[in-house]
Image 1 (cartoon, helix red, strand yellow):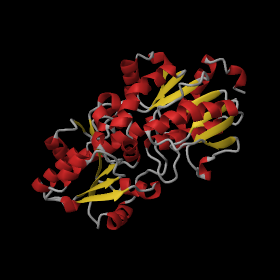
Image 2 (cartoon, rainbow, N blue to C red; image 1 turned 90 degrees about the vertical axis):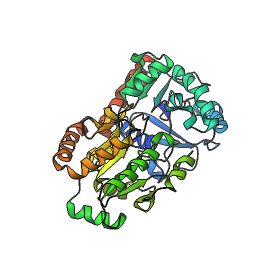
Image 3 (tube, helix red, strand yellow; image 1 turned 180 degrees about the horizontal axis):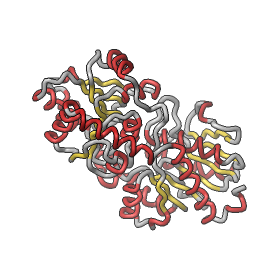
Image 4 (tube, rainbow, N blue to C red; image 1 turned 120 degrees about the horizontal axis):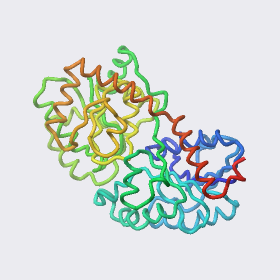
Length: 383
């Protein structure tokens, strides 16, 4: 079978949620299917490390699709043209978009529908595009994969897609995320936080991630407790952060907030493993990979009680109203002072992490693809 895959989120040193899903799942999926020929559709020059196996042909399609008008052109003109040119049998898209301008079977991965619930958190042009086309994409798809049970039921509720048409393929975490020794934690803290213990947030900085409430809780924590802790924030500044910047400039303990920018996995694994706790207070998530990475590192997670996050974290940390500043601050203090509670969260996390791995994700993805092929009369091309 000749299978095209949308790989435009495979960006060197810039992998985030969708990019990591594509990288970890698709490279395993390709390895599981050496009998097929794969065509990776990039929208810009690609890194050779993304050509995982010999049965991959890279194809760069113009224009670079990073704006709604260019998304439309890429998916409705560039992709259909390439599907015909390379005589493709099926198209897989891992980022929530697909082409309405082809009759080929398409397998679509939807990570979340945050824009349906919080359209104002997205740039106006992107919001208009998502709300116009995402339902059409879901209805056009031959089969859909979501990364959580929450998103599966959200797609059903928002778009009326039959639950039988949707498979759940969880994200995973790389095996490099694991506990480290106390001496190594001291070295990491000496390097990144001047030796101080720290709470941690990892992810892009934009309204849905609710970093402003995290800052308010941390400010209260520093005001009311005599703990030396810092708050470390790892990730790129994304969009609509005027309110957050305004609050940050009024903070009495602003100097204790460490903005680290984006970090590669070889550093990030030790930063997470050395944290007092991972803070993940998003009011909407499709999954939340840093939460799982923290559980792999045996670090407690203080999370929002909304959407997919309880599904990922299990009992690996307290689940709180994401806007309850006092409750979040109290949870931070409990993690610091109550060693037995911390141990309880770590032990619960050890059990929870058994549910997730990229190998399991790839196996589930492959099973979904087999169903997709059968439903679209591609069985004669499976071998």
